[in-house]
Length: 138
Image (cartoon, rainbow, N blue to C red; front, top):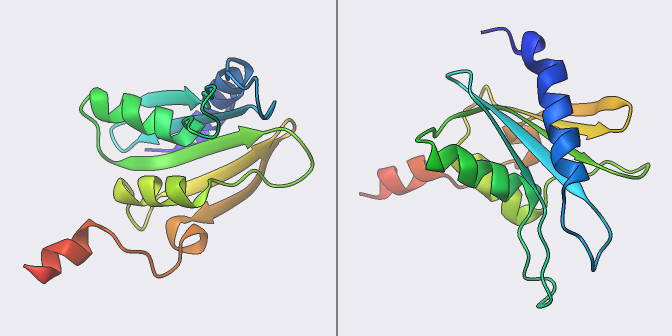
């Protein structure tokens, strides 16, 4: 499967998700879009609540939608936020992405102009702990 053919669709999906974020406290919208290994697409946005910071991240929302649909393998994930700095996944989301990743998974960090940086899972979360660590313990 050519990931390039999905690039614009994933960017647009993440950007649209960001526009729907519920962020009355931080005022910092984030969107995420996932391409699974089977070619399905999922999106999520961050959602805050009055018990701030007990909200959910965009990446977590996209992953939840993916899992609800029976998918478990992220091929690519696009994350977009506003500002000049890279809006990378938080530590918790890095681990959530890792749970459903392989060595081929790419994380694309976006801004308004498009993809700013693409990373492998190992670059984003080096020396990570994943499901295979638990399998080795048995």
